[in-house]
Image (tube, rainbow, N blue to C red):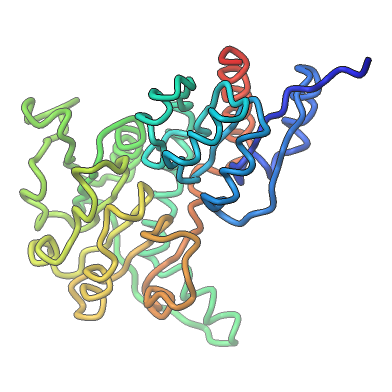
Length: 312
């Protein structure tokens, strides 16, 4: 009799890119990978079909709606893992109601996301992107940049990534303060001032968003916040897109309140070419890819597989 393999749905793009790494691990466990064709996320309708026929699910940024989780329960879904840190797309109440265990893989990308935030900062302050574009056009372009030593950065979210970013900024001689409700009553954490949002935001030359998304901080940067920032501020978002109301950001750039921005994440992903952000030359656009390094992906793949194995 032929052995029936355990079917595992994989909907995380970075993990799928590393098939050569994780497929042999699946084989050793007697698992069969189910990998649908998609871009950034799989639609709810398609997920409802897929989860009925799998034993486990390694989730990317897909919206795990009530209907999706219910479909999994109606089928044979026994456990799931959110690949990565962010869990704003996970309906934990639905998983709890249908008694399907789920967790994420915390602490996997502290260096990687902080690194890309620093990369965005250097690119914005030294016009690296525009210099490259002009030289390729045959123009020997020499724009004047900004030194970052002795400037001030606000770090919105002082979790593992925010703390890691703070250490890297200190090496560059950047002064820092942070916003994080977890530490608000302490006023300081590890000698870093902690503020109530958006107090003292006008002191920041750079604003970094590194926090998770929740019901309390959606659109925390909006038109009212825009009124409080320093003219010429630079904004970098490596957290979640909906932390920023994009209409407010666009207005800030168009009115020269915000000098430039770098966004790895957006309110709606993938980013539509109709989005006005794509027309702004002083805005660097990413693809929700800050955590994606070979080393980090392998580490997270192995952790996700280990966790899921214990749930099945």
